[in-house]
Length: 621
Image 1: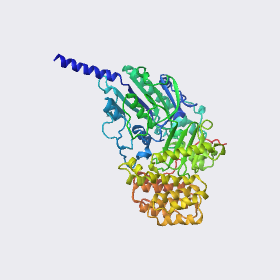
Image 2: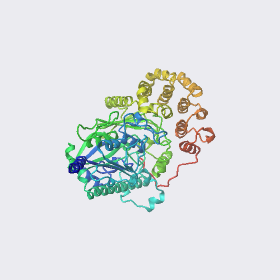
Image 3: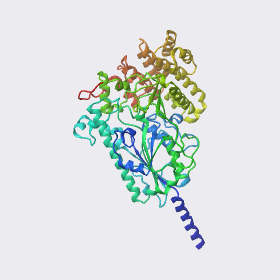
Image 4: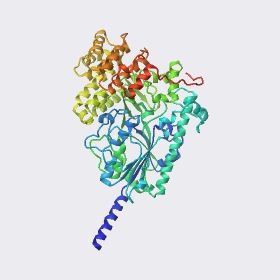
């Protein structure tokens, strides 16, 4: 009996020793904010003493990126360690849940299974992938590390919506009745924002929200200290993506992707990291790397078939560049890929005839968004402020040292030709290496790939590469692209024809023989999405009325997702320079009627006109 008692006591002591040898982890996540709103990272931001205190005891990462500029996609990247366009989680909101890649689990499951961690989530998930079993001990607004067993190590993730976009959905009365702690007169606006009382108040109010987030950080640290675990706990503070003034959340710019990240290193586990307290790390890290970093510090083997790698702990290191992606956000479609290396960022707009300001109902709930569009329509914006409402170039290159807000496109400047080619080649390599599933339209991906998106991408890698090559015909002179466009338009692959039409629209021209070929596709192609893209070309570049073609494509549509994609083209043509009206479209013209379809029809019909904002005279050049 004494032997057995001694045995159990020994086992218990070993468990306590093992627990003591494993660090705890707390993630404090503020929603919808980029580096531009904290003065620890960017001049003009809010003072955040508690976050600065974390930094004094740890590491500031000056180049941390969310990979996606919107919550569900960014969070899916964060929890899986995988690039979203590789595993089918790149669309917000999802039209179908993707399975986890073969052999991969959401990373907290490894902490639980291999090292006995108590894992809690308070309480937002918002994933586009199926979580599977064993990820969380508790996921609720009451989840807390205090519910764990005595001595059990823990991983606690908490999101705070104080800084969420919805916090700026105030009305004009609020601007008068709710003064801000930060003086709107002292705000430094981004150069692409008009200098109006609305924008100044909105910016000031958001800085106030960041101060409140800083207070939350202080409260969490106090709880850890009170529980006697602060010396054993890594604390990560970061934003879940950029935001949230106009042209940030939802857009593949620094303002949408560049997040604040500070990691407090606990006293008892300082030996696990080589960086000194108070240091600033200049290397690049992304959301794909956060999970592997926690696993590495916890002594858990990092799974294969993920894209992330640890930036802290044994064998860790940062990256030479960051990769970002932006696809559909609610009812608004786009396809943008982004690379940041050193002082330069490179933006690849696969639908350059598109414009950033394309209607998105949720975005335009914000008064600043509404006012910005109104000023544009009234011709009261300067060149930098108008960019948001104008078609883009197929590629853009920005020097962040000279142009931190990415306003001056250097892609056409011969002095940067070598840098442009380098960045272009890097991005081309990324989209082909990950078998980027967005080269297929979302409806096709949903119907054909969602049983195993990553496996589908591998199986169709050559096809994806072919579509990337067609899309990149946008980057050469039309005379050099013509033969490739013609070949794509005549391909048996509908998605080659689809991209052939997009490339022709990007060039904004086509000789009569190609224009005739595209018109034939608009009238006769068996794939409605090809007809839609052909109609898009005709509407952008010719006098042919695209509306009957769009209506026919809507009637051919086999899914709500495809219907929404077609309606996106209708909104583009209506809000573009030609102003082709689709206000006659009704629910009888569509086969499907989900919330995004209804939103598009309402907007096209004018039933949801922009709210007119009363304002003082805006400043121009």
